[in-house]
Image 1: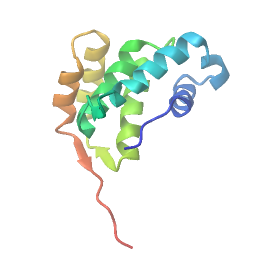
Image 2: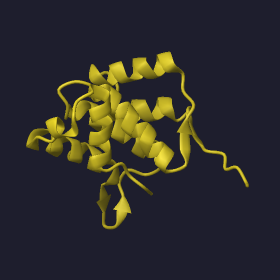
Image 3: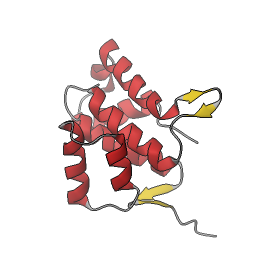
Image 4: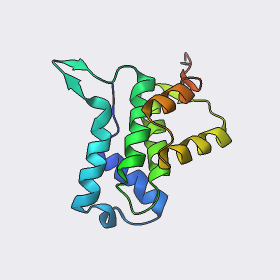
Length: 133
């Protein structure tokens, strides 16, 4: 499984905030961002503690949003990192835009947790259809 790394997330954040990456590379930002990005990769005794692509995607969206690594744009970064993770692993998110915005506002307000995100996006996540050439 492929995960979004810190550099990729910083590039996304740079675009979201329209600021150079160098502005975002403070120790505070890096520690919070790295912690959030690692949350979906936690293992114990060689086994994933966060199992399945939907659970991993929900974990990323939640922790990136709630860790607040950026001065602004944390919900957008959490949502975009989740989408990028799914894309990197040949899945897509067929979503309802209004519901997805509402979901991320709920995360920011502390009203939705990983299980809540996982429940909602489980209806939206689908494997990409491979096209034969």
